Structures are given as structure tokens and as C-alpha cells.
Amino acid sequence: MLGFDYLIIGNGPAGVGGVEGVRKVDPKGTIAIVGDERAMPYSRCLLPGYISGRVSEKSLTYRPSSFYERNGVSLFLGRRATSLDPSERKVQLDDGSRLGYGRLLLATGSSALLRSLKGNHLPGVHLLRTIEDAQSISEEAARARSAVVMGGGLVGIGVAIALHQRGILTHLVSASPRVLSQNVDQRAADLVAGHLRKSGIDVVLSTDVDEILGTDRAIGARLSDGRILECDLVVSAKGVEMNTDLAVGAGLSVRRGVVVDDHLRTSSPDIYAAGDVAEAKDFITGQGTTLTIWPVASEQGRVAGMNMAGGDSAYPGGVQICAVDFLGMPVVTVGESREPKDASASEGKVEMDTGQNGYRKLAIRDGRVVGAILVGGAGDIGAFKGVPCTRIDVRAIRDLLLKDGFEFDRLVGALLVREPAAEAR
Ligand SMILES: Cc1cc2nc3c(=O)[nH]c(=O)nc-3n(C[C@H](O)[C@H](O)[C@H](O)COP(=O)(O)OP(=O)(O)OC[C@H]3O[C@@H](n4cnc5c(N)ncnc54)[C@H](O)[C@@H]3O)c2cc1C
Image (cartoon, rainbow, N blue to C red; front, side, top):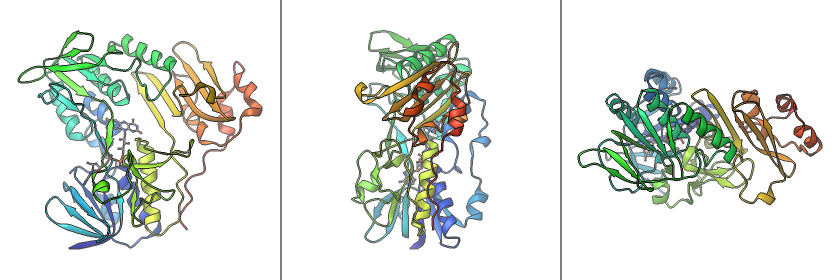
């Protein structure tokens, strides 16, 4: 049986971050990565662009094979870890082999959620998580005339835009009364939906898909209001579930994700978790949460890697950040960007129009900026992203914030940006 000082399961940004973190502290220890996808690590964020034809397959890759050679990493790609035994420090792979480890990083990510729905097994119905998913959507898009995308979140909108850009009549169907219901407030959602409609995408809200129609392949979708939308292609983008099977099987503490402490260590001392699969601290609330975004996965991977190698790096907490461009409309959200569940808990909010089709807002609680939204062209987006990452009390300048013409970006530039994770000692 082969054994490694550090074994990483999952070759996405959290796994890659894990390698970088380990190597910051330990230049020599042996490292191996097991990943069930064969491709070199690629950006899932760019998959909608790949479907639209605007991003080449080559430019999806963000770490070439030389990265692994340089870092002395043994790769086990196209192999799946099927079980984990913490007491024996062994991982079983799907080809029957076993790998031993000194310390292990679970970086298994999440999977697209397949809703149970009549007809969802039919050819022509797709999920979007992997490059293979994107390739098969892209192939079918070459022949499709109309498409139904289920789910009005970031991935659903991204796919709908990609298919629209391929000249396909595209219906974006969301059970929620607004798009981006997990990311923005009503006003921002209205601006985005209006922009998508103006651009030619049929946005259908407060309506679910009840059934996918067809016998040999998908030919339409029956909606909860009784309407039937004819289509050649269906993409389901209804959220994700965390890949926690290994952790559950090994008896680790798991809620929605694998529970980790401030050093990203799981309930088993030599096992760490990072990325979509991990339930780690939220910077703003201090509570455990799963934040399924790229920069968080990457940072958590690095912090976990440093700690696995003997460092003492406290994870400061993740912040939900979204920065996208929907057909020329930039949308940036940071932290608590939806309406608060308990309106009385929110001390106040600052809303500022930025002209036609533009909107920006800061959410303030207990004197601190806890969230921000920017929709439309105005403002320095880079600076805006840092706002809720500060612990500055803005009470004294609250009136200033509310003033018309307040120079928002200047304030942001002057604020302290969140201190990065402490480097390993
Ligand atoms: C279409 C799409 C668009 C996105 N757009 C954005 C965006 O614009 N901005 C943003 O910040 N985020 C975006 N994301 C989310 C972002 O891609 C994820 O947060 C990020 O990839 C998570 O990284 P990870 O390393 O935790 O997991 P993953 O990237 O999921 O990698 C985990 C890897 O581990 C593998 N694996 C799982 N179980 C096993 C096992 N038992 N054995 C071996 N291998 C295993 C998985 O197959 C996968 O290859 C997008 C995601 C998708 C799907």
C-alpha cells in the first residue's frame, strides 16, 4: 500500500489550495491528490462562457500539469475514494487500491442537485457541474432551437445567457418570485430580471416545472400554472448538495457540510476539510456555514494545507461574494445582501441610486457594514467588495453615508480590509 504524508481528496480549488498551503510550510513532505475527474483543474465559473462559445476549452484550465510536477504531487486522477478509515489512516479507492496518509484533506466539493421530477431522466435533460456536463450541453445546443433552464440563481442565469447567446429561444423558469433569491434584494432582482427580459430571455417567475415531457427525449416542460413550454433542451440549476459521503462513512461530524474548527480541522484530529464541502466560520456572523464560492474554497484550502503541515493559521471566516456580468450588467453582492429575515435586527440600510438601471446599497447592523449590493455600471467594483470585510464602526459617519453624492469608493479605500489568514509560523 502506498502512503503519503498528505493526502488530498478532490482536485478543485480547495484541493489545489491545499497543495499550496502545505508547500508554504513543508517543502519536502509527500503529497498525493485523488480526484474522480480526469481533467487538470478547470474553472467551473467559466463553464457558462464555454457553452456560449466565448471561452475556449483550453482557457478553462487554471493549473497545468507542471504545477503538480513542481510541487512533487502524485496524481490519482479518474479515481474515486470510496471509503475513509480514520483509525487506520487509510482511504479505499474504486479500483480496489488503498492509500495511507499522515494527514488528510477532504476537498470533495459539492454536486448539482437533481430534483425528483417526472421526466428528468430523459435525454436532453442536463445538470451543470462538470466539464463533461458543459460539453454535452454545448453539443446539444448546436441542434436546439429552444431551451428551458430551471432555477433563477447564478448558475441558472449563467446558462440561460449562454444558450441565448447561441441563438436559442431560452425560458428561465424559477419557482421563486424573484431571480437571485439567495443573493439580492427585491429591487436588485427586479433590475436584473428586467435586463434579462429586455435582452430577449423569457424570465418566468413564481412558477415551477411540474413535469418534463417526452418519451424518447425531452420535448417540453409543463409548468405549475398549466402552461407548456416546448423545448429541445432542459438544464436544471436548482442548487447543490455537499459531497459528504466519505465524512459520514468515517463518522465525522457533519451537518449540511463537514463541520470544522477555526483551523479547518474536522472532528477527527488528522483530517481537515475545505471548500464547498466544509462548514466553516462565516466572517460576519461567526457561525458555521457552507459558502459555495471559488475564492472561499481556494483560501480555505490554503489555510487547511498550512495547518496540516504543522502551521498555526486561524481561518478568519468566509464572506459570500458574487461578482458577475449579466449581458453588460455588472452585479456585485457581498455579505448579507438580501433583506434581513428579522427587519428589526437591521439597524439601517443605505440605498443610493446610480442613475438609470443602477442601484447600490449598504446594509448596516450594529454600526457595521454587513452587506452590500451593486447593480449597474457605476462605482469601483474592486473596492466595493472589501466593504463588509472590515470591522469598522460606521455609526459616526452614518449621516455622511446617507448624503447624496457621497463618495462611496473613497470611504472604502480608506477602510481597513480584512486581515488575511495569519501565516503559518
Ligand atoms: C456552473 C458553475 C458556475 C459557477 N460560477 C461561480 C462564480 O462565478 N463565482 C464563484 O465564486 N463560484 C462559482 N461557482 C462555484 C465554484 O466553482 C465552487 O465553489 C468551487 O468549485 C468549489 O471548489 P471545491 O474545490 O470545494 O470543490 P469542487 O470544485 O467541486 O471540486 C471537488 C472535486 O472533488 C471531486 N470528488 C468528490 N468526491 C470525490 C471522491 N470521493 N473521490 C475523488 N474525487 C472526488 C469532485 O468530482 C470534484 O472534481 C460555480 C459553479 C458552477 C458549477
